[in-house]
Image 1 (cartoon, rainbow, N blue to C red):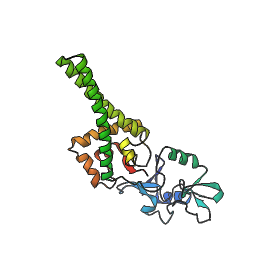
Image 2 (image 1 turned 90 degrees about the vertical axis):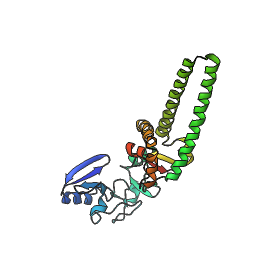
Image 3 (image 1 turned 135 degrees about the horizontal axis):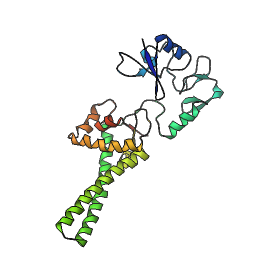
Image 4 (image 1 turned 180 degrees about the horizontal axis):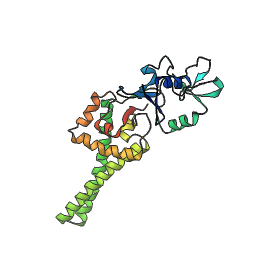
Length: 252
């Protein structure tokens, strides 16, 4: 039987059952390493597909059989003075730079993602809508005053209104792109203590944040079914979350 396993973002394999077991014994893979073979619907942790006897998942801060400590990243055993403690996890010197970088980038390191409920997300959406309404209304009023003071030509009025709509669209796109790309959350989401991340907990790039803003339009065009579907999804994903492969999680 041919197996494939993941090392970071890279797929390795194929390997046989015996080779996979040898990799586990050597510490090259841990119980948490994602593996796949033909017949599996999705990638699964090695420990859940028959690897539990060969290697157990490296629980945070778990002690190795030899009395050492297991690195939460690579799963290898080290002496207590060769690892650094981060919260309830221990990380070896080789894994420390990558681990620290992931923490600085906002990745969720420990435990499963705590997905935000439909109700919390709805509240955040209302707050963002109010903020954008104030900004756009103020802009429309200012341009309307300028139009009335400078020109009463109907053609010019239509042109000004078209420009107003265009600017409002740009503001909405810039609002979502900047805040999601920079902070992982819009002001409304910040107030509700939730943020948008990738499936592994890593932050969004500005490109993905911008794409998510446009994808959200589709959620509205489906009579808001694209939003409502989050209430019936295990990972609380909306249509635009599915399109852009994002998740919304609790942040504190």
